[in-house]
Length: 133
Image 1 (cartoon, helix red, strand yellow):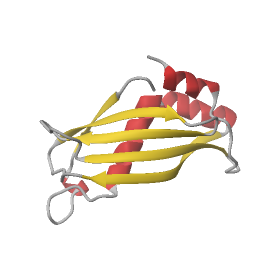
Image 2 (image 1 turned 180 degrees about the horizontal axis):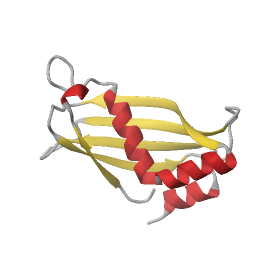
Image 3 (image 1 turned 135 degrees about the vertical axis):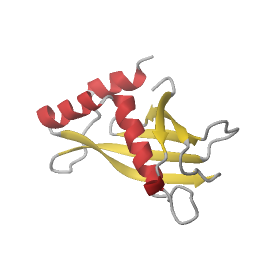
Image 4 (image 1 turned 60 degrees about the vertical axis):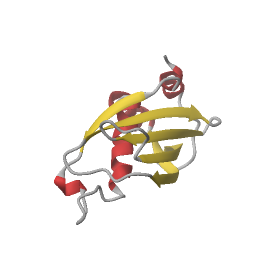
């Protein structure tokens, strides 16, 4: 993905812990939603229904730099780099309103799998979507 994709996320009360900040596993859900929007859910559904191909998280690394709070609307900024024919690396950042640095940084490695959970090359349609301007 040659440019950064932006996806807004509303922080709901249910997303937070007793201290009023987002409970850390919820950032994985926000990242997942942003990746789906960056690629296009119709493309992902078509790949699964017609070719039996989908994507799974192979590795996830998150760095927490600032607490994100209830009622904020954050910007999830997503970029992607292909790392060979089977794997992609997604850098995702959560930006709070008016933030001077990302509150959370995620690096998510994804692999392409078939319905039998066997590694498959990333389809040409996804490669084209990732490198499109």
